[in-house]
Amino acid sequence: MRHALKRSNQDRLYDAVTYVILILLLLIVAYPLYFVVIASISDPKLVATGRILLWPQSFNLDGYMEVVRYSPIWTGYRNTLVYTVLFTSLSAMISLMAGYALSRKPFPGKTAVIAFLLFTMFFNGGLIPTYLLMKEIGLYGSPAIIVLMGAVNVTNIIISRTFMKSTIPDELYEAACMDGCSHTSFFFRIVMPVSKALIAVLVLFAAVSQWNSWFTAMIYLTKEEQMPLQMVLRDLIVNQSALSMASDSASMGGDAAAQIYLVESMRYAVIIVSTLPILCFYPFVQKYFVKGVMIGSVKG
Image (cartoon, rainbow, N blue to C red; front, side):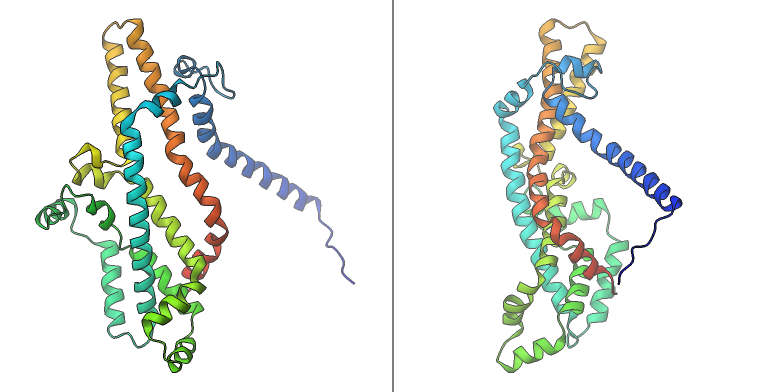
């Protein structure tokens, strides 16, 4: 017969304090995103004067309308989608294939390869040698550099190797090999289907990192039509800051002030528009996230 443990007053007090702390932490983390939402649909003049704190006021969608009409944003959106899909596919496949090879015992020089990969996690050539190298091999100014740079992620390779080493025994390959299965067939027909949790984690890591990336584009791309969405947002914020500084240093008419408020409203609207795809994408892979990361990171 099962008996429920009687909870003491100290246990209840501990739970209450824990809930209060967690709720406060949730409010601290969630409020900035909530503020961006209510600011994007409120009167930008009220937002600029600090009168919007908890609820939207003077419902206004001019920021969203300007975003729809601002063509560089949609060009950046298209570029970011293309870069993210190509980069995520390439990075996830490299991590899976490298992790599979390094998880197999017969792989020659496995220890040296792992040591070399770990070395690159702590030491690299730096920005200037990398810039000169990219220019020398012809990737400077090419959109291909956005897809190729950073596609080999050592952390993801180690997670893949540990995941496959823990979940795919050598006996499984030996049994498949007796049926005439090669390494390539074994990888695509057996390893890939049983590694859905790992694939979901790798896709999430690569997609989020590429979606938020802007530094590589700023350094290596030269044409505006090749810029990703994050660079368009950066230019928008810089222009808005320049307008704000100009308004402080000189008296401006009503049209100039209205333009500043409109750009301010666009900034909040763009944040919503740019983060919406990732927010919609995350719930589909969230259920695999804990399983994939835990299995891939427990054992060395």
